[in-house]
Length: 429
Image 1 (spheres, rainbow, N blue to C red):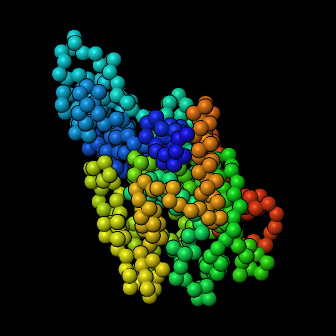
Image 2 (cartoon, rainbow, N blue to C red):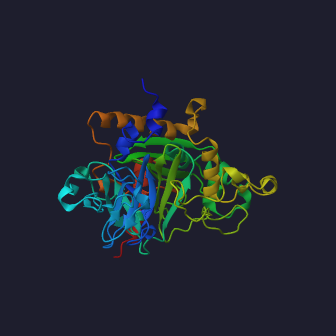
Image 3 (cartoon, rainbow, N blue to C red):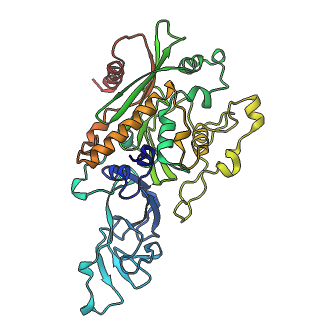
């Protein structure tokens, strides 16, 4: 019997999870990374070494970095006249992977019509280049997350590389019980004026409801509210196939966001976050525990396979942990919610040994999600299309978030009705 964690964590060509993920569109790069006739960019996706480039006409190509002639890297190539030309022998390819010239062969000996490199479908929307790595005949429309449609193109998008397997990164966001401890462990409920924050930190041990949905999995963490007599404080989150997550990092009204942890290889993934421009949460992950406002602290991109969007705070510098601040002011001494998440998930190792774990009742969403993923991967191998792979509309109505209510009844129905009321209130009369 196959090791379930090997099945879940490995995403290269031919793996069960890798083939499943290739049935979905993947956000691969910012549009601004690619200039017409500019330098190609190395991209790692699902264990494949690719190059991305924008041709003279503005079209984007994403293809295997190796020239099909003698395997020299097309990263070294010349991006010119609507194609990428290998500098080794001058063979040239358009964005669809077709060989359009063989410069080292006489015209009568050329066979360019029979040469093609592996190239993937691409699309651009709101400042992001998307790639579809499956059968192009089965490509659906781009996923319709509400956070992907914002008025200021590209400004609501974040890319941050993480040095760990995609699964442990996703599960870090799927786990809500850590929020009151890792991020707000030093907070005193009697000293905060924010009711939602007080609901979160007065009782740091919620209970859970979990269910599978048409797009993945939804769970609600709940606890009695100290700020609303008879009320319940809910934190609702979604996992959406194949690697998307909507954690409750803001109120249900404001939480117009979605994140992905996209496997680069089995030991690196790329956080890609889409957030609403009006998204102003009190625990914004660009705010240090000490209060100073900072954006993601990333190095300038380099041209290496792991050279894009690397955080300054990393294992080599202990995430700039401040032990004095940890003792006196914050719980971790690590500045910024995103950096705190990065630190703990990377600290598990680049490819975590899950056999060492002892899951608890607080991990019910993680356990259910793993089981669901394994079931979907096995079903796909038996010819069953994975959830929402052919229905981009399935994502449109999903939104996580937190809220407090005195309403009783089916928790998921209450969540959907609360969201529906918010949306109706925003529709002009």
